[in-house]
Length: 122
Image (cartoon, rainbow, N blue to C red; front, side, top):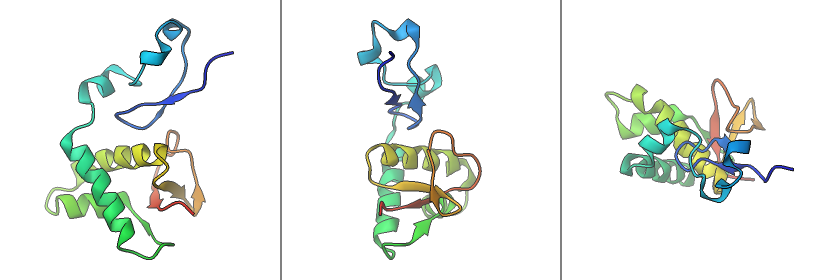
């Protein structure tokens, strides 16, 4: 039986166990070479902080869109920040600080495609 899955420290997606990692499973931290190369930058940490600050300043039942955070961080050129905000939200989900929803239902952040909303856990 394979060990429990892990979460990539860079993108927040689930890392599926692979036979080739059998001996090194404890050291596996990234889901891909791209995530290993990218890592978690100061911008990523800032986006996590912005998500939590924005959610904290609203009603407990409110949600935010990743574009709200991206627009706050870079009002004139926010589109390139959309995927970094989604990655930051997935990392926060892994830590239990937020939930990602679609159509009002909590979804698995690793498989969510399309528009998402971010909220504090209920």
